[in-house]
Image 1 (tube, rainbow, N blue to C red):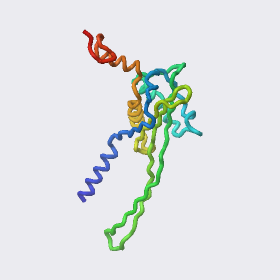
Image 2: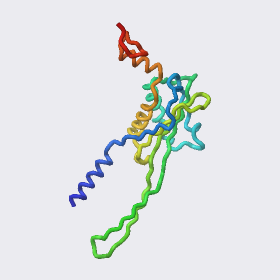
Image 3: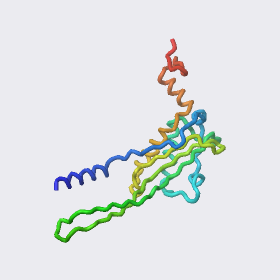
Image 4: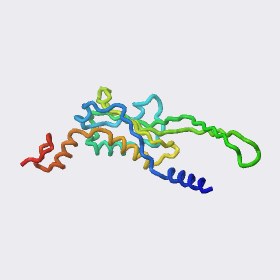
Length: 193
């Protein structure tokens, strides 16, 4: 009985805990991304064949992406140097668990089969130049079903994914100036005399 209560407590705590998104950089920056600063968000339909799933989430996603890109030194512009493609997807796979155990009553052995579905929500972000050349691409996987979606989960996925984008060159220079004071040698990071 105590074991059951401990397991139940662990399950409740795991359900209430914050899930950290898993980030995978599919196409790292080859050096062409950081020299560019202005971007344009492309509608998800331009990156997908057909209708974008979870249309209701894109209203929250757009400002989160703009904010995340701004913290990395990129700004939105009518004359962009970069196009940002983004979309949400669902990976769905069946799970089957077979349990063989004797029942607590004298009815005899039985076999139970539990059929579940594993749904994992993903956010994909692709940064290209104006010619469509991919400069950077990453995926954030929440490990949770979109049925358990929350604004906090979407925000943490966007923040974790945008933190992987290289900082724009102009923003990097500003950070180095701030860290080194007004007499800093930006190239070497040394203080001037």
